[in-house]
Image 1 (tube, rainbow, N blue to C red):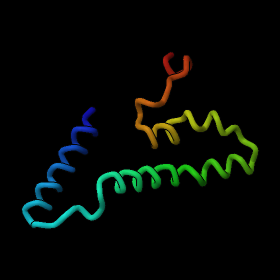
Image 2 (tube, rainbow, N blue to C red):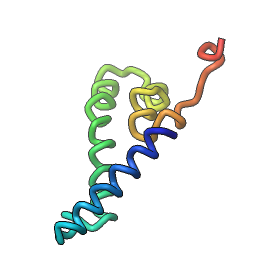
Image 3 (cartoon, one colour):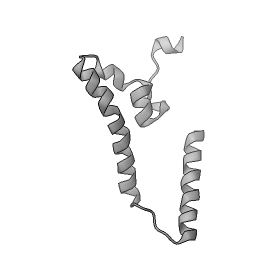
Image 4 (cartoon, rainbow, N blue to C red):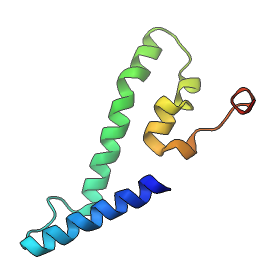
Length: 85
């Protein structure tokens, strides 16, 4: 929860600075968020392509913290029974 609060706090601070300086955000919020999502997904394209080329299991990789945790946050990663032991 703390990273989310820090993120919203940083965003609010930047918004206040923009308002005080009289400038507008460099991109409309929806476009900026889609760009960030594209960056996160693009970071995963190379590891997925490597796994496809080596015929390694891709579906298992998608659930790991390196993939799902990076794109959706750590709460999206499901724990296996081995992790809980």
